[in-house]
Length: 391
Ligand SMILES: O=C(O)C(=O)C[C@]1(C(=O)O)C=C[C@@H](O)C=C1
Image (cartoon, rainbow, N blue to C red; front, side, top):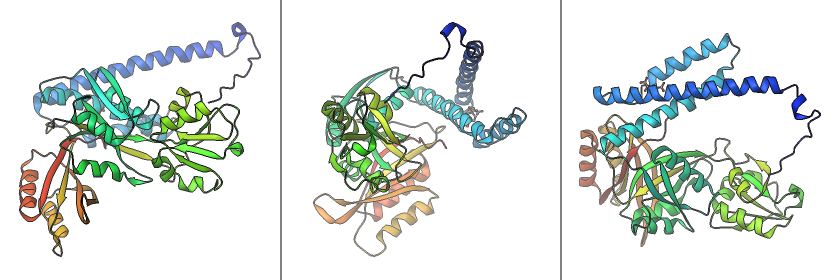
């Protein structure tokens, strides 16, 4: 990334901005203190909720709170969208903090450190997702970069790490089939999820310009997510890599003006690359959902919004899938995703992956799963975990 330092017209001591910047610095410090106080109150709130068995989320409270703040912001000429986005981040932090505290009390233990496998090396989107998830759940993390999704599954299954984090779908390129296929034949459990906004960048060595590039390196996923942008450069040779960070590593080692990688800005800085273009995915809201796998399933407190993911194989008779989905409807269970993949060794039969809103431990979920088992060939719970879809 290029850093352009505009030579100050004034010696540092005479800079007319200094007094104002000092005031901004003091005010930002005060803002941090207020945010810390708000966070401490969230801790008090969740402890009260635990005592009174009150759910973490109160959507109506959030709606009224933000609406009031937007109104109050008007007299200070604060833009409505600014307030909306700012409090989305503040409230999301509050909810995730409360969920962590609640889950730790619910499971009667707190895990301070963890070893987590991700698609590496450092600088990949999976690395960013892993660090974000670890920051929310652990005080210390040991990072384990893997060269493939299969490698991540094996690391967790063999106990080389505690958790594995893998991308499972993206808003631009859809489901990541390789991960779904690996889920078909594992005994691991989904214990969490995380949605990460993905801002793809064209990353190149310093002094390279866009028109000098003739070869671009990346993981297959970014290429699938940026087809519209890549149509502008039909002469670019596409080279697939194990991960976006191995692509950035390659471009940095080649150190030539005609090569570039597609990856994230932070990763590019790790490899000394500059950003030539960014935010060019087919979907402007380009988000990848990651799942977190572990050898042991978790229990989710009934005070935390939960998701349950199941694997299901129906018979070949007409309407088999419809009958199964009607069971969910009859139990008033919301299905948030339905994906299908060919069954290993039997490509003309489909395995269905279904994400359900709700906790596995609820009576209606238990009854629905029992009914599903009686009318299908195979039903397996892949996991019940706190929902990350805060907003
Ligand atoms: O007031 C509550 O119940 C809180 O948990 C606090 C808070 C917030 O951060 O403002 C967080 C989550 C709720 O959904 C509503 C509001």
